[in-house]
Each structure stands twice: as C-alpha cells, then as structure tokens.
Amino acid sequence: MNAIKDLILKMADDALIIGHRNSEWTGLGPTLEEDISFSSIAQDKLGHALQLYTILHEDHEEQNPDLLAFTRKAEDFRCCQYVEMPIGAYDFSLIRQFLFDHAEYNRYQMLSNSSNNRLAALSQKIKGEIKYHVLHADTWVIQLGNGTTESHDRLQKALTDSMPLALGIFEKSAFEAELIRNNIFEGEDALRERWLGSITPILQKAGLELPDISTIEPAYGGRKGQHTGHLKPLLDEMGEVLNTDPTASW
Image: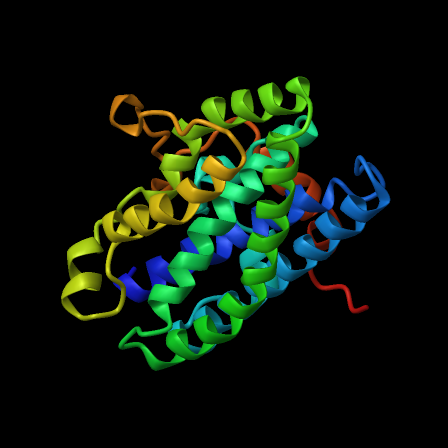
C-alpha cells in the first residue's frame, strides 16, 4: 500500500465509522435540535467517506466504495480507536465530536495545500463543511462548560477520559516521512500541534482544563488494524444487508 492510499484510507475509515456512530443519536438526542444536528453531521461524514473511497477506487485500483465500506474485515480498517467507541452518554459524544472534528478540520486545512492535486481539491471542499461541525461542537462545549456544576463536571470527566483515545488520532503510519518529504501532508506531529492550538482557547472559554498530554499514553493501534472489541459488531451491523446477497440489485 502506497503512502497516499494509506492516508486516504484512514481518513475514509474514520469518517465512515464516526458517521455511523453519530447516526445512532437519531431519535435519541437530548433536544430536538441536537437530534437533527448529530444526524446531519453523520450524513456529512458518510458523504466524506464516499468521496474518499471513490478516489481510492478510481485512482488506486481499490474496490468500489460499497465493497470497501461494507465487506472488509475489522483488521483491514485503519480508523483510529476513538471513532469506533459506542456513543455512550451525550457528554462523551459531544467531547468526541469536539476533539475529532477540530483534528479533521485542521487535517483538511493542511491537505488543501497538498502536492496531490485531487486530494487538495477535495480537502478545500470538505473543510468548508467541517467548519460547521466545529462551530456546533464549540457552541455546546462552551455553553455546557459554563452551565451547571453537573454539566461542567461531566464534560470535564469526558474530556479527561477521552484524551488517550483522542491522541490516538495522530498515530503515525510507516509512510510518515514519505508524505512529508513529497509535500503531500505535513505529518501527524504538525497536525497535533495545530489541534492543540485550536481546542485550547475553546476549552478555556468553557472553563475546562486540558489534561497534561505529556503524561498520557495514546491509544494507538487502530492505524495498524488493531481495534477494540466494539468495531467488529458495528461492521457486522453495517454490512448486514449487502452481505446477505452481494449480487442483489436494488
């Protein structure tokens, strides 16, 4: 697998899996507005995954997007472990959306200057959509962080508990040096620094304390196909219809 294919695959897998996780809030949101918001964000994520899988299919001789999304085994996925975790309570899902989308917005912003023209063009488009995901998360984190003692404490706990998983977003691949050398992507360390610069002022406005990441062991493994026990059941559910009869026409 070459460097560009590996980069696009992990981005697509991230978007696909968190999109399905966010869709699980449909009908369960704490308010009607949040029910609609998480459903809309989920739809966007699945659209991003489709566009990325399409590049893999057209430019890198991979299977078509449906087969890439619904027929691979768990160990073939390159998503970070954070996105595969169950939705849990609203505070966990909100903090995950906040931390993940800040990372993705900065990733696409960096990739909009990539030497890979197709990836750069797609990144220009997608970062505009993710901007609104970030705005949604920022608004609710600040509001609930400055809300009641309970809402503040629950967000703080979700933030602290999530940090090892969130740092796993920035797990490097074997192609890191090649991506940087060829001006395809500036690298995961550069992305993590941008991410920290992006989330810190929002957390300060929310009265939340960013844990000391120098003392935290990141939850790595997902980029190498090492996943939690939560991914396979989700993939089985996602692919149930297609796998019942892969040759069926709809």
